[in-house]
Length: 174
Image (cartoon, rainbow, N blue to C red):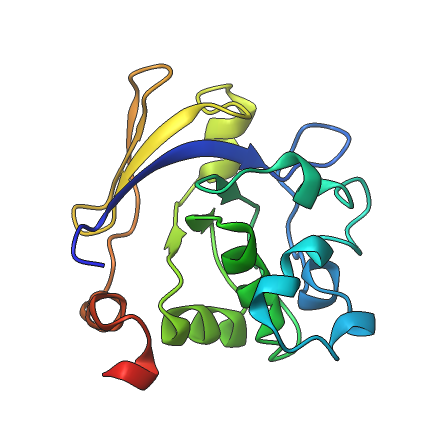
């Protein structure tokens, strides 16, 4: 990837109260019952299969969509499938307040874009970002623009390491 900008529709992964879900663990993202699947292209249909209320996410999302979640996304195990399942669906990026340490490292090493957006829950609660809004993200400038409303937000830009890995495709190709 040489252009560090993306555009897509937002999926707010929320609870019944409309708040972004915090502490989504790797078992909720990709259930351990499917760890025998080794082809990335086959993993997508199981994304969020163990996250109550989101089991049908693979049928609803589209390639190019962007996932927004609460803090500590990807907590838990070192399950690479919890990153790869989003790639299989064609998800362009995940945006969260924070990530589980192992999940963050796995995503960066694989060249999958994850971004940190401080206070994301506040903006969602205020209605500044709504489900299926169209957004643009500049990974290097650290800017997220809600095309639907015209509002612009600061997010944490890519680190040099994250940028270098993304340019090469994955850590294994550096």
